[in-house]
Image (cartoon, rainbow, N blue to C red):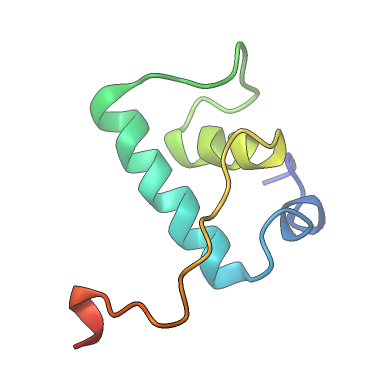
Length: 74
């Protein structure tokens, strides 16, 4: 993958694990419902489009509250 570069994406989201998680969830959403956030994309694939949205600042990761307990952490 050439665009966007991993270095530019790491400036937006601090860890590769978080980056993959956010991109995968957005790619699934794009595949099921569409609703693209950008006017044009370089990539034709859903994961590429999700990464382009992250690079453009249209998609961000929400911070987790430190005292929150989620259902998969019990």
